[in-house]
Length: 98
Image (cartoon, rainbow, N blue to C red; front, top):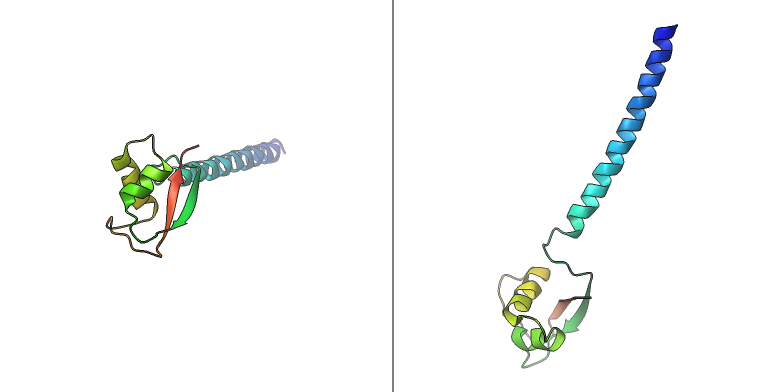
């Protein structure tokens, strides 16, 4: 009979350990997902590119006090762009620092 009660305790411990492991895995997935892009931006502004706009002018307008080349790089990464070429009417998400 004692073996049966030890199994119940072991099962309870196993259940608790599995629950804790599940919680930790879920927390880690959310942490990795939020930092997957390597950017620490909590929000963005979606804009429509106008004729004459360049990534340089857009970066300077929305984040003027930062290294413009770095901001341009972040915009291209944030929008999954293969090139820095943009065209009028294109929608861009501009990552904003808070």
